[in-house]
Amino acid sequence: MAAVIEAINVKRKMYFELENTPYYCMDVEVSTPTARGGQTLVRLKMRNLLTRAVFDKTFKASDKFTEPDLETVEASYLYSDADGSYFLDQESFETHGLTNQMMGDALNFLVEGAIVRLHKYNSNPIGLDLPEKVELTVTYTEPGTRGDTSGNVTKLARLETGLEIKAPLYIEEGEKVKVYTETREFAGRA
Image (cartoon, rainbow, N blue to C red; front, side):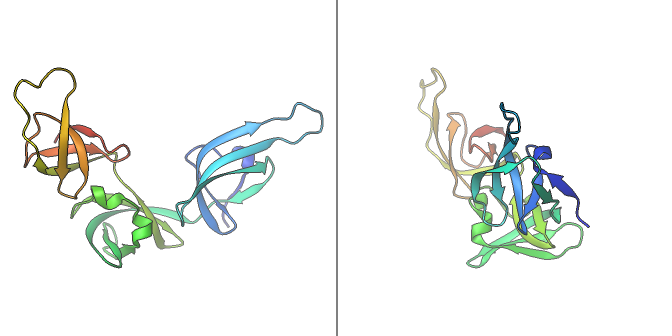
């Protein structure tokens, strides 16, 4: 039997299930009544883990949710085709597929063999978590102009996945760089 969670006990970064759908809590706002007999309300900013949709919804403090049958496994990226992207579970060595909709823009950060965390709901893969930073090779960048070193000057760099970032002038083609997956910003040399 899955554990029951009251709405008042839901915290940020927590997972819960509502109407047979898993959700991730992004933010919580509790409003307590000023009048006697008023109800405490909990406003949740939540992400549907199946559709990736984000929305706000208000619940009574006593509303109950169940704990979802979620599992996180380490997997390595294998390849992508028209049907989706495929990953190899690092423990069971099963191949899991994610549709292009489930992937979102994650392909901009994945190279063959990259390790990610796959989310499985009722033993079916539903999404993934990328690491905070990834290492990618620069395939194209314009040469920096000599003397153009005042301040924080950047240039466009295209990476092996096709992602384009702003990189410092000293970065050359063929170098490996670290990129933040959340902000798509240059994080340093690898």
